[in-house]
Image: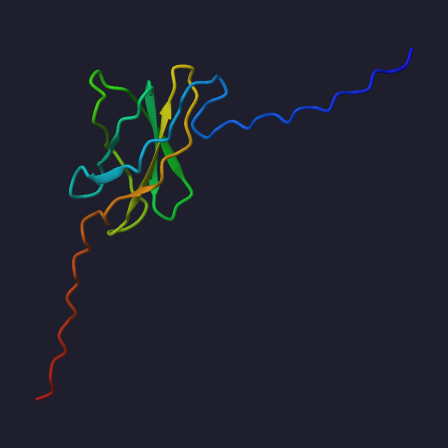
Length: 142
């Protein structure tokens, strides 16, 4: 028997960035907004427009300039049309006054796959301003 000639292999189609391996639609959410939840910077509110077909969201939060992030999971509220928000408290900021937080959001499909991350959203500088220390006045020679 002669060996059968091999058929040229068809290139595999690349997955689109908004479809998971199971075929579910998993678009990345839009850039989130971040605002202060308190004056000291120990709580924040992350808010973003809802995404169709999402069963949950993952919020990745960190301080701007740091490589360390925390992941928070938010289930989809009953009335998910419009805006979704996640309030995060108990933060222990490493930076001093004026630090910024950065957040990215991922949508989660019914099969558990996560979308690509949203563009990063940045908070305004947060935290109580350090009190200005008064310089001791020099006495003028008399």
